[in-house]
Length: 309
Length: 294
Image (cartoon, rainbow over all chains, first blue to last red; front, side, top):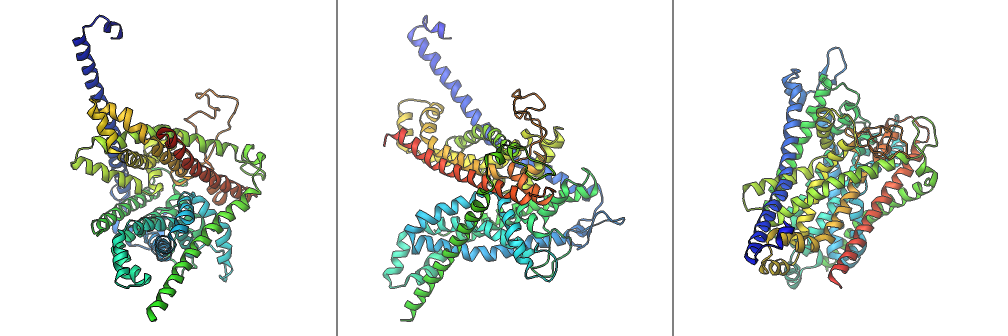
């Protein structure tokens, strides 16, 4: 091509460069479109693969889906094996909801402090540190829970170690606290100034402004922050697995050991034969996790459609 | 005066909550650093880990972590930047684009263990590779790609409109504008985002448990031929990363000094994340200054 350039007339050269450019344009568009389509391919593949594999225990092995979801009896290695995962579903929901109950008020209050009460200090010190904490690996949280929290809780128990639902809840609360705080702080900071000024001009105190104006205005986004935190807590595996005790009975108090869907999958996936009934039920639990994360997304979508400001 | 007292009380309460958060954060950090740094030594970082005896190091695990991170970013950055460019510049306003957005949202909110299970199914069993570095890196790509796409899209959208319009007005084609105007101006934010994402990938464990495995074969650090069985660069070997190692020694291992190793390993992980964060901020500002001559 380049060699020929010399011999071309001016008009030929212009035409050829335009053709090159058009070819380039088409190629570029194709490359980036392909990159975007990979995203679709990955999500669809995950849904299909985990869906098919997760349904195998019901369709191929004949485990009753109703028993799977409602029975409290998990005993896959017995001569009369039982595959009820309700204790783990309960455990997952228990740690998620309890940790959200601890982390949400604390995180939202911290976010309000950062944006409304001490914006300078909050932005310069607290925000960078919180963003840093979002990046701390979850195994580190689990490990600290194991070495600090578990022995501490053991002191209050008459017998056994401190592995408990409570330990799992506290580890998860600390883990999702930075997520909730930083999203809530963004939500509060993005509220228009006129809201605050209007309220102050009417003679409202800062607390009245926060309670009656700012929090209601930011409420859907604050809830989004909490739901994102809950989604993270629900899917967290290793940190919880290290401190919760991984038993298959329903916990009677927060000090009892428990198990969650993620911890049982983590624990047993390596020990069971691929393709066995027990292994297949683990995939069904993975499917439950997948469905739950879809539900969390739907919830977040619903909340953001209600966003007012 | 009642409402003023309430206001004071509320302020105090918000202050208390912020103080609790700050205390938790400072406590966590100092615990990790204080306990870990005493464990850190040149020997700890450069000795091979041991399965039963005390005194093992984290050499192989640390190498594996960086290597998997490198391969993941090698796959993620081009794909993510491409996807981001599409979303910012080419995406038509239609159902397909909406669906891609939903997919990005789905991928970024999937629990990492679910991605690990998908990786086990797809890159371990279906391909027949077994536990491999490449399988782990591909699983991490699934989980990192949406982050990269979002970062790129935001970066390109925040390039001033004048630049793009000036380029188009000069008769430069769209793709050429993307290549020569938009991506160079967006590079600082893209690099910052990529480094921050690296921090997340570096500490990820659940997705690697079932894809890169819990073991590392005997490595020969003088063998740099990537196709040799004992080469550290071989991408078809199992590889236990540092984060997985911390979990492993605490829950399944039988080494007597598990806590000391986990302390040291956690410190290395947290310090790395810290370095990634600082590097991201510093590099972002520096490149920005260089490009804009401010």
